Length: 193
Image 1 (cartoon, one colour):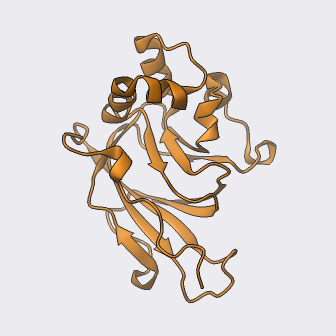
Image 2: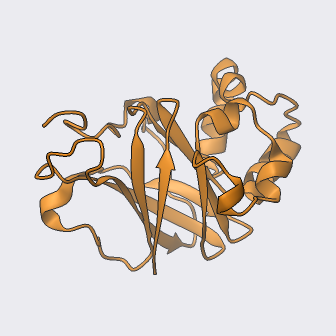
């Protein structure tokens, strides 16, 4: 199934997570901080563990922009070939416990309100900085496809974003040897004609 969302970023990145999965990690690790981004920067081993265990999938450093997001569990890239800016080689872990995947601007974890995400409001009550999709519960291997319509000269409104290829797997893909900070998520020429 394909699911599409739009998100506006006011910080240079976004994060994907299942609120129940992240809540369990926070409880298990006894994390009391509400600025999870700062906490994970201060305790990088905890941030690495959250990513390795599929609790968080951070997408950064990318420009603040309006992005189209495609969530695809069909096994085949849906983005037309002429729009593809790149398919990232890395396969990332994502664990879905509740059947809900939240995508939020990085600010969502800088002032983290777990109750807000566990009781996610309908779209008309949100600011466009976050979105949700329904996914099959379980472990997923995630590949990321970057896309942009370079033929559209209306830079601010042309199609650009990410397609997340979600493959159900028995166990989460390993992150050994992968530097999450070095993954090239930025879309080339995003703000150029």
